Image 1 (tube, rainbow, N blue to C red):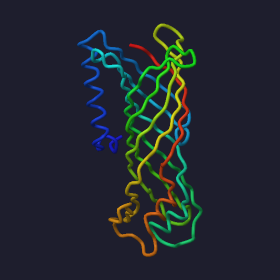
Image 2 (image 1 turned 90 degrees about the vertical axis):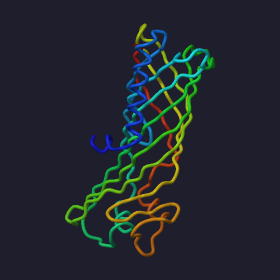
Image 3 (image 1 turned 180 degrees about the vertical axis):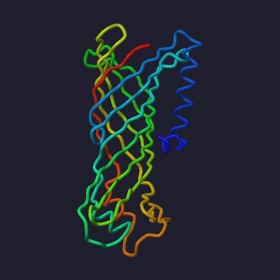
Image 4 (image 1 turned 90 degrees about the horizontal axis):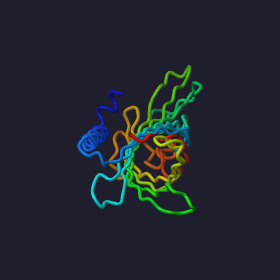
Length: 227
């Protein structure tokens, strides 16, 4: 949690949420809802989100902020070890991958397929990806990390369960830009301005080793509560 609080983008998200709450207190006409979703977003994912609508007269879009945690493919532990640390072949690797996504979407209601609450959405994303490797009996434990900007498009449908509660289905596609990849005391950058790169290895090798996010399909279900 300390890592998240030190991230500037996360602080911006908190400020925006605080502003949304103030707006809601001052204007009863504003729509405010919050939801929980689970499913697939590059891996098994858990999402918390909040949405605000009718916060400006005549503005046709709603806004949604979301925080997503996903368990994802960390790539090859052996390749990551070679590219970032050394060529040793000892130990049995245990690996895991995780990703935090901060998401801002603008939603527009459409009337397709006879669905009363169907929205198309799009907006920016900020991802923090970590590939963790632990070589048991090999004396190597390390994290490879990359933070990426991206954007995405999708659609979501709300199905009322009660006056306050909806069942939600959401699907879409995200794309993330290449970014600096860091681990141990080494960093590779897509612009060639890395740090302490190992001889014979390039940014492409680092990218191939850890399988950082690029195109990612999303499919989640959950519930949404109207305040």
